[in-house]
Image (cartoon, protein in one colour):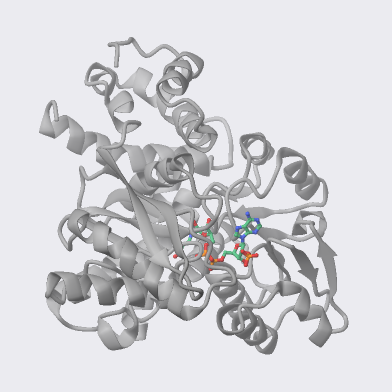
Length: 452
Ligand code: NDP
């Protein structure tokens, strides 16, 4: 990397794009971050002199490997897998594994990059990483998923460890996959340690881990409303996705008195104007987690609801929108539509769900807009608490973990307010707040280490 004086976002990005060609998701994540952080760096030249931003946007290492496995017809299959170990300045690498056909190195680099700052915001000692494979778990038998997970772990185990790198779940990696991965890790290493999080409660898992990302997202939203004397109570909420994050965001929103009206999956969205109550959430949970069905089946049971094939839920007028499916699932146009329909808050459960144009629209509008780094940090925070419990060889109660989760989300909100305060405005720029607060701790650690 050439030594460069940092001038502006465009010149910084031109260098980054040249060094990382063909990685649009990674470029997008870095640009959003650089737009917040470069003005801060200009005021604090010590980071610039140490080339902190240039170093932070280069992963520590990427491990790429082949995963060979046998399907139920005894055919040999091969997939590609990665572990992107992005930055371990403030703790062992930590971040999920994603199994989806859309997984590429670019996707995992964006996720690992964002994870570094999200983990920093939690206040826990965790570095940033992400991994996964282009393996498609849809339509595979349990036995096929097991053989794939075992084969993947046969390579991955040598790169991870409880003090080195601690993977968890993400899209396509839930309780079933973590169990297969952990079972194989334990067998290969002959050690029972907390090298994976999201484990089952019978073998070292933490209470509330399953719920943590969705719950945390709603806690963050409530913190934003509370700051201006308002609450999520009585608000209508649209949620995209119908996986882990979406389901528990809906559960907590309902518990706090909001009315959830949508869910989606990759085939379309359902709109239930009567509201999605606890019984309906239980139906969706069973449909997606156990039966591995499609969200369209909701309308066969609940006749007042409609299914919108191939569409996303952002055309439905609501007070709060929570994108909880995947990256770039909310375009600039959809952001403007949400704003025109009077949305008061957008709180991101998924990672980078809003395209950059939409991010700009939300920030400029002054609504309560929480970027994913802050809003979905509850999941990794409780993963960190699972690591602590494993190290202590004890388990905390549901109430204790939930209290800690609430305290962490409150603290992240406070950090965002501190760093996202705008001198001439009443509103908080939560994007700047999350990026600068997340950056600060990692940057201080990197400065302290010198040239490493
Ligand atoms: P799940 O696999 O449990 O659910 C993903 C949901 O999103 C499914 O409803 C899925 O639909 C939908 N989806 C996936 N890809 C697409 C796509 N390309 N277009 C439309 N819909 C899609 O994953 P999670 O709930 O765990 O993760 C959701 C998001 O939250 C991700 O961005 C993830 O990185 C983020 N996140 C997750 C955390 C966690 O603890 N699990 C922690 C922090 C962030 P379908 O069934 O059709 O595939």
